[in-house]
Figure 1 (cartoon, helix red, strand yellow):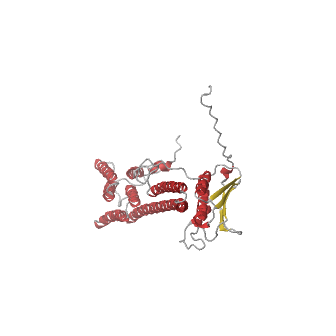
Figure 2 (spheres, rainbow, N blue to C red):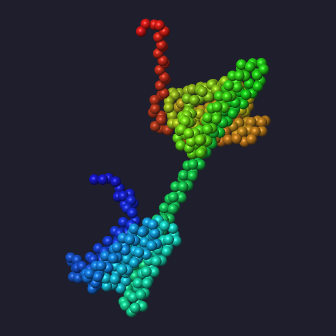
Figure 3 (cartoon, rainbow, N blue to C red):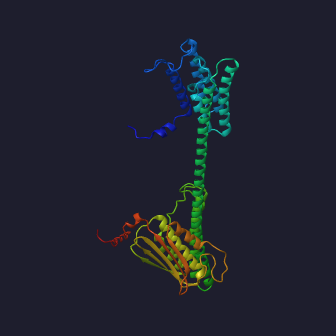
Length: 433
């Protein structure tokens, strides 16, 4: 037995099939109402004179052929298809000997009205409804003008079914339109959020790299005549930092241009993406900053272990931005980074003994620089992870940035990262095997 749901399978049935099913269901109901069923003394409806005659059967055959023609046109020309279906309904009514178009002969038109209102513009649906009601009025009005009996009350009920079918279809149309708008808005919000994330990453990368470049370039300028070797090393560091920054910018701009995975901004396949930074990269950051002239001491506490990528990336960016602010604004030659692994949280603290002020907001005391986004970006990262953030001048001087990031419960049970095995010493050359 198949376990697949029924409704998704029904959604794949084309509208023309539903219209045809309604037509043949109406024909079956028409025949049953004219046959005495078990428990009945007589049939519910007296059959017409032409019901079993050859000309009556030929009329039913022709009306069915019109119905099939209308079903085939429903997807391409809905108004023309509805007109053909209305003609089929009127033609199928003639051999029945009734005074109005019965509901059984109008079911196919009702289904077609529903699909037209649900899938087509408002103007098309309204025209289809007007055509349907006009045919009903013309059928009853023509009989009344000719002096024949006319089932006006019954025809009003049939017209109401047409209106209800159109209203239901229009409601489905509006619901689909609303869902599409919600999906489009959600997609736009996701795109904006992703681009804001990339903008934060770009700010952190560029601010740190430019700070290191400025520091190295200043050092090189001071010792270029007295210590050319040191100046050469500083300029080499400037070149390396510049290349790394350009590489990061190329990847980020490629993402903003919506290129595929593994492609650069020009769409080439030769730009592999580098894994996102994490806590393991703090030591590399400290070495690079120390080489630039500001000594960074890293104090690791607790049992080091793997954490969720978004938490590690945010922690690294907080340390990177804080160290960048020390380089640019603190006017000191050292800072301290403390990373503490707790059972339920990760604690980060960056302290220095330099100048305080609105560091990270782009304004240091006495500098008058333009406002930036350092502290705001760090605070936003911590808020997204439901943590706590603090940044203020330290009581004894200097500046302190602290963040507490909660560790998700599944990550707390992870084992500590095992230390890599030390390589075995190679045998001396020429030694016996």
